Length: 148
Image 1 (cartoon, one colour):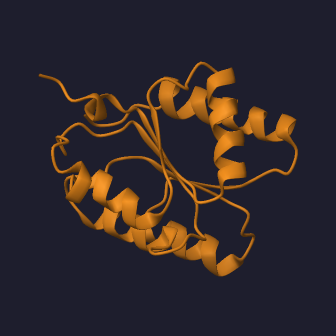
Image 2 (tube, rainbow, N blue to C red):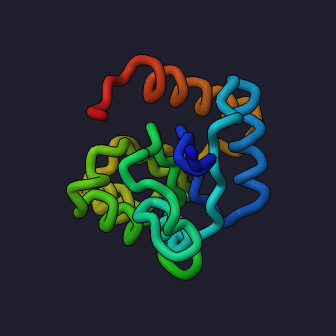
C-alpha cells in the first residue's frame, strides 16, 4: 500500500504561520497546493526528509521535487537542514530554495557554499510573493530536469 507521505512534490519548511499561509496560498493559486507538506521547524524537516521518528514509515527513496526552506527557525536552523541534506548521498540532489527575509551576506554566502540551488529574499507584498512563487514553480517543477 502506498503511503500518502510518499507523493509529496514540495516540502515547505517555515516556522512563521503567516508566511506559510502566504506561501501555501500562492502555491494553490499556481495549482501546486495538492502535493505540499508544511513542516514547522528544521528538526521536523530532517525527520521527514530522512524518514525518522514519526515519519519512519515514509520511503526515503521517494524524494520531493523541491524543498522551500526558511533560514531562521527554532530547534534546527535552515543552514543546518541544508548542510545535512547536501551532505547525504540519498538527498543531495534534491533542489533546495532558501526563502528567507535575511539579506545578510554571510547567510547568502554560506547557503551557496553548502549547495543551495537558489536564494530568494521574501517580498513583502502578496502580489510580489505570488509572482515569485509562480516563477519558482515554472522553473523548478516544469523546466528544470533533476535526477530521479
